[in-house]
Image (cartoon, rainbow over all chains, first blue to last red; front, side, top):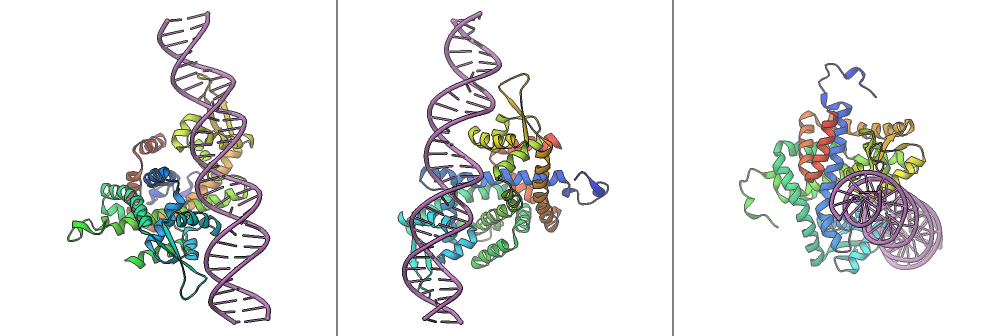
Amino acid sequence: MAEGPNAQGETLLYLTDEQLRQGIEAMFFAYRGFTADPDRILAGLSYGRAHHRALHFINGAPGTTVNNLLNILGVTKQSLNRVLRTLIEDGLVESRVGRNDKRERHLYLTDEGAALERDLSDAQRARMRAAYRQAGPEAVSGFRKVLEAMMDPDMLTSYQRLREGRG
Amino acid sequence: MAEGPNAQGETLLYLTDEQLRQGIEAMFFAYRGFTADPDRILAGLSYGRAHHRALHFINGAPGTTVNNLLNILGVTKQSLNRVLRTLIEDGLVESRVGRNDKRERHLYLTDEGAALERDLSDAQRARMRAAYRQAGPEAVSGFRKVLEAMMDPDMLTSYQRLREGRG
DNA sequence: CTTGGAATGTCAACAAGACTGACGTAAACT
DNA sequence: AGTTTACGTCAGTCTTGTTGACATTCCAAG
């Protein structure tokens, strides 16, 4: 890559390879912090990050179908099913047959499931809150902008649907 | 959680649970986009994300020791070793016994290793560049601020050492 | 100088969680 | 009636994390 013709007076200093590399590494380290707290909680129980994700999105969209969850999480049904089965067996998630379309299963958190979700969420939100507070409102807006621009287009629409669904 | 006493005229609107939740989901979806392009390249070869990370940080700090890499990546030495072994066998990484301390192994990319690292890096940087461009310089600064605030303290120092080491 | 502990790295075995492929069932659509 | 869709499951593989056991090297205390 080297420098190219941009090296001179280009106003977009933040687009140098080195700046981009720092962004990449920041993303890597930050994601570790992002998952660290819930991971610690999950380690005690016999659950993993996959269970957390399922609980999170079921909590955010109660009654969602398996297929919908599949698309959001971006995993295969076999992979999701393994996780979902244990959550249902353990009484954290309830699966109700659809009324209109009986092929569908609608997913809900039980009280116990909601309690665990809240624990995990609280831990993750606490870190996010601290980071937001430390960085300030301007930074938060930029943070969100860059993240949205980094998503795949179809993921972005999933994300925006989720946002709109809850204001 | 509910609303609490902050609901009224609090200036920190971005600290509501819902705002935090959106930040969490943005992080989740964005990280998927972040890794998608390198993952596609790696899928063809018989390598995974772990190989990418190793190549990335060896490239950034040629001659680094296994132990140092361990701390940066945050995995066990056994886990790293498996990845490293295949990279060495395939001639992408060279491992030289330390001169002062013969227990240490110093790691370097071969030409072939550097070529693959560049391919992966180019793909990842391209997405990062597009996101930065779309979001604008202000946003980029905020993005970095929030990410740094989200890291674990020791990860942050690792990250800063890497930054300083290359300006 | 020797010996024992600490540090570094390797080998082996296992678990979580992703994947593909194949198959079965029930319901809906045409 | 036949096809498609939604979901579940069984079986097998791969990546990548884990622990445990072990070899080598260094260093420092006896």
